[in-house]
Image (cartoon, rainbow, N blue to C red; front, side, top):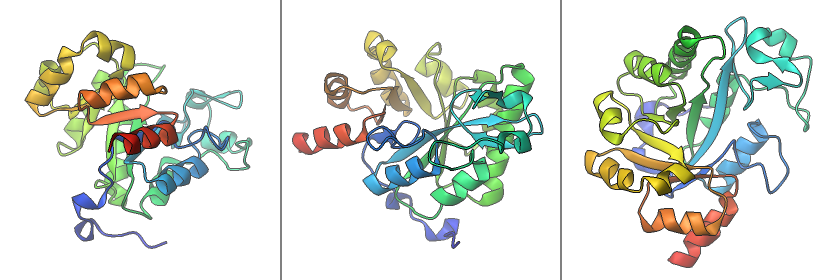
Length: 250
């Protein structure tokens, strides 16, 4: 596989639309969420970004899966070899973070939105997942492709400390834009219900130079509300619907 070097990729080579496919573009074609297939479909659609979720196994292998449970096995309590005993519905094995990143690095249009999950085993392990995620990205030279999101504030700060140039957005919704700015975060990525309740945070974040994103937005009314307020990104299970809406607004 040929991977382009950082120096050969212009920042403006990535798509500039606001569409982030949630767990890849999976819903329309009934693909497994967080699979290589759903990553490829998000890339084919031309999404600005494709979001995916990262857990760490018992033997510290980073894997891509939304829930802590994979086919009846608790990822954090299982070894990577144990996880390989099961397959996704399309026959894929659970992707490692390295495999997912290498696939995404074959192109330069769609960014990879890496969500590292808070550990159910404690803050220290959450920090370790954040640290290892960043170190894996750096090892592969994937910094240009990757932005980070997390519900773990401590893990987010650990990721920023590991790479001060990393773009890390926070998901939980309990921090103001001013606090995020002070702690070195790139922006907020909050639930659509909270964003609508705290619409002033959109303006505050924009004034502070932070990015704004909302999840998981699957109907045109909420998409329109966000676009009218010029949010940077919209995370959706329905990227095709959002693309259709964007075309109508031109």
